[in-house]
Length: 301
Image 1: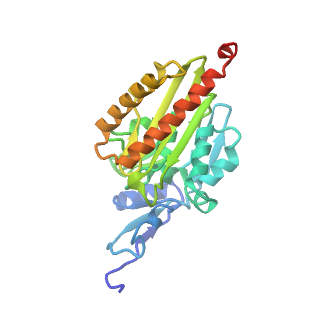
Image 2: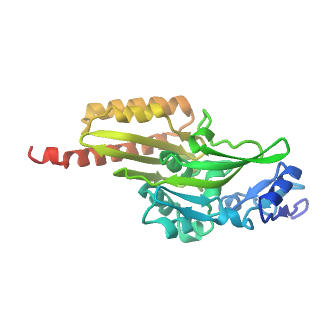
Image 3: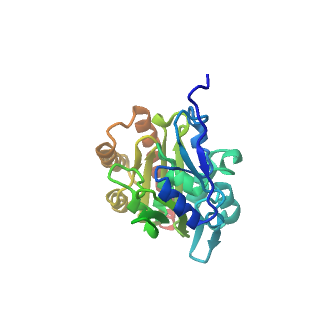
């Protein structure tokens, strides 16, 4: 039964210098953070791959650091989602906290890390879309000319035209920086299981300031786990042009424009994902319509 199966070779660096040496010698290594996604995959262990190399990042103390000031919070990539909630729930954006609490029980959030949630291979989790909406920055470590380099980048710069987050060769996210925001409307919605029914799941992250009847600096991202992330400044600009409350005709126009973007990016969106996306969008518009109607300028009408 077990003929041909083998255990992977595990490397456990304690700092970036050791990590650099290992990744140079084994450039095809898989990075292991919390393991919540890897170990949920069929035939994850034992492996039938020969000479499989895994670099476990848990021993690198610098990846577990957390710091914050009055403008932003900064997390090492090995900080768990549970630690993010316990250290920053009162100050971090609501859309981020809602996303974490939506992921699952503490059995998951105590192991899942912010770096792993961003850099999961083979699927897109709910997390990158939320951090894109929050204009997050990441520190990327990568090998160039046999040396380890470091660069801070907007997360959107890692998003390719097909909606996938793409790191440089032998790249690793080492830190994530999230700015605090005072946007008065933040919404995270997810329907379906990203782990067991990924082909039909969808999540949406949205943040804006509703000022009278218009949206200031709206940002929205749609995530389809097997396909990628739909994020476009053009879509944000469509939301900026709206005046709330929307009537049915205006809503149908918004929906048509949105699905034009979605269909031009992802040709394989399922019918269930389409219906679920429509439901989430309708919910967001209904929320904004209600808020616009209950603002002071409408109270006397």
